[in-house]
Image (cartoon, rainbow, N blue to C red):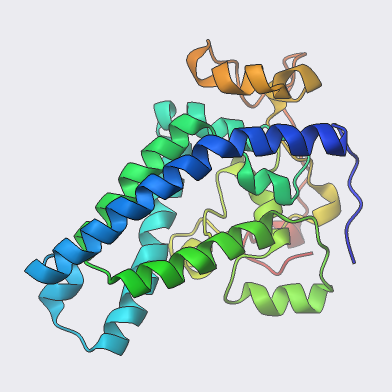
Length: 263
């Protein structure tokens, strides 16, 4: 069953713009693929990278490599929020006022370029095999589409899944207009990393989440030209509405534990 959200943009227009935004990313992914094949071949031939130094079995190397790929991307995602220059680009993803599958395609070309460099370095330094990369990348892309979707799962199913993986409710909080909520729930595949790093937040009912970034919540902020030029323009106070007020949320005593079950 799908969750019906208020639409701020016409579906056809939004989908078209998201596809246009995705085109540079698709082109870069093709280039990245060639570099990664070369990188995994080079590291295997020279036994370069962490996993080659440890000397694990093929199965153990795959499991550890998969987990390390996801953990290191957690750090990368967190840095996209905490490093000012990187946030300028990542903010293009967050100002989407409607969270759905198309949001998973909405990344600035500049951020994609940074991510390509990170992915190549990640593969080389970890020393993962080409098979590990291909499987992780497939799961990574599937997870990204899944947790950006506006599908409402039965609460019992959502809670069960969220013990292991990132779910739509959990990631919806990450796209909230509340600064403290946006700077939480950085995981992509596994929810464990947020729990271990105390960045997990699950105490916000889904119905209470407003999607977007307050300072860029107008339709005019989400045109193709505005999103392309956003990182290069003077930045607004991200977490204030145009009238200067900040989003507020009442937290009851039973909601103070940020890691409690999703609602």
